[in-house]
Amino acid sequence: MTSTRERIVAATGELFRSQGFNGTSLKQVTEHAGAPTGSIYHFFPGGKEELAAAVLRESGLAYQQLFEMIADESGDIATAMGAFFTGAADALEETDFIDICPIGNVAREVASTHESLRVATVDVFNGWANSIGGRLQAAGIAESDAEELANTIISAIEGGFMLARAHRSTDGLRATGAHVQSLVEAAIST
Amino acid sequence: MTSTRERIVAATGELFRSQGFNGTSLKQVTEHAGAPTGSIYHFFPGGKEELAAAVLRESGLAYQQLFEMIADESGDIATAMGAFFTGAADALEETDFIDICPIGNVAREVASTHESLRVATVDVFNGWANSIGGRLQAAGIAESDAEELANTIISAIEGGFMLARAHRSTDGLRATGAHVQSLVEAAIST
DNA sequence: GTCTATACCAAGATAGAC
DNA sequence: GTCTATCTTGGTATAGAC
Image (cartoon, rainbow over all chains, first blue to last red; front, side):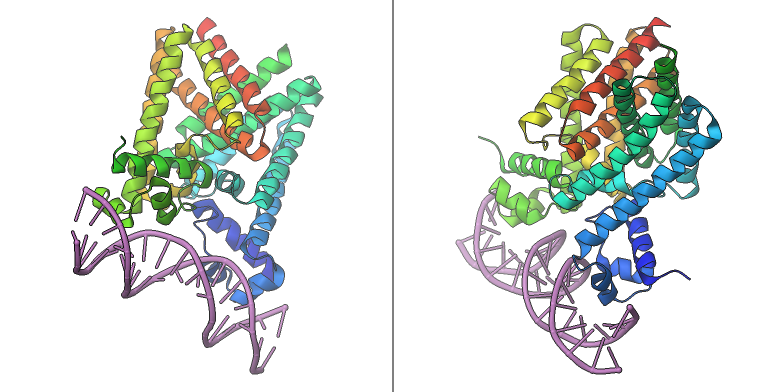
């Protein structure tokens, strides 16, 4: 029993994963969501841009919660990061290399063209950085170092997703996960 | 005295940097290049997709040559990587955050939708990986380790570009450059 | 709040004169 | 090989009945 709004947001997120922002038409959204054209403008009067902002913020939060869950289960942050990469790699393989962060897919498309969406992606990235950075600080890393390391980790994740989708292989992504894990371990032990 | 073909490719590359593949229209290309519509189809009978493939391959090669030049000047590969990140960060700031790798901009847009362009991005990434990996091997790192590290470096570069454009700040990119440099130093010293 | 029809415009691509 | 005019399609967005 999902609401029309939820179906529209979910369908847009899925399409963003495989086609990005400019590559996704609202017609495709309505078809996948099983909703009429008018519903998009009923729930999102600002049209495509407002819909996209909602998709970015909501799926960004979902990924953050996923990370928090993995971090809670893993005990220490270094192995948690490794587990996050492994889980993402598995998900990619299982979905023929499309089930991947829609935020990163859209971020470079809109950074210079849609200011409201650029801001939405930054807000999401900052939320992730706070989440990861907090865990790093809890492991004994100084605040400014933790912040920088968190940003590097996010860079490696998003860049790793890019290479994995291009190569249609997760080998590099898994190796990058191991590199990130060792980087975190080194930062904690110093 | 640039040829029409060169102007078209250059204009498309610039537009890809700020708007990506789907966000760039052929009309914009002709306007920026000062060329008529027909010229695009004269030089690139395959239309937008063939033009894009040429842009990706040619600018990919240009970045590879830029890296080789920096690596030659820097002496050791670890400081070369740091210099590459710093140079990219400077270029970003000087151009209001648009002068950035068009390949990475386009890669995630086309990976699941335009097979010929996906292949073009992979070829470019492999060229970079060989270039960086060769330098790492020359510094004494084993072949398979060098290959994996090269891919992680490329991930960090492309992901770092993404965050820098979203944040409109190069602080994170510079910090990531330092992290990459230390990762390379650690790999060499073991 | 749901749905259909449609307005309006920009996209990629093509034809054919020069 | 250059350029203009145009075809066709598909895009976003809106109007208005129900």
